[in-house]
Image (cartoon, rainbow, N blue to C red; front, side):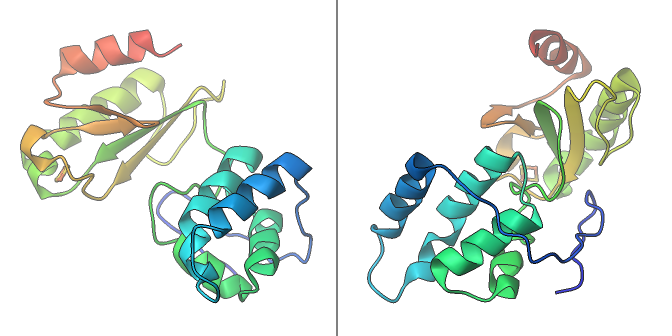
Length: 175
Ligand code: FES
């Protein structure tokens, strides 16, 4: 695979380098693998991608190469999954990853104003990271909380029924 791209990534350049992980991390990966039947190792892709992302900060080529070898899959098979889901990062991100839902319900309930306010306050555009590497802002597809639009996600936390005031409080609370 020559390159992959999403709205918040740069080109990923192919490399043969393979990441190395501690024995504990490899054991953790084996335990995920053990939850699936023999011959169905592809089913473990998503939990294992989360482990790679946690360990390396994002999904880079050496990490993906490791996973392809670990699961006996083609590298392109792993990238197919890695590039499909917005919870996987294909480049280094800030300490706090603010993912603003841009899909219909959120959009009509004020997402553009929310995103604009956050970006103005942080001095960045969607898809960028602040210079101090504290915040990354991305606009993502529906996060499944349409009834509480507009909403966003930071890490594993949802912030819902957003107003400008709520966003300011949230940003102040993220250290
Ligand atoms: S449209 Fe925003 S959570 Fe579904």
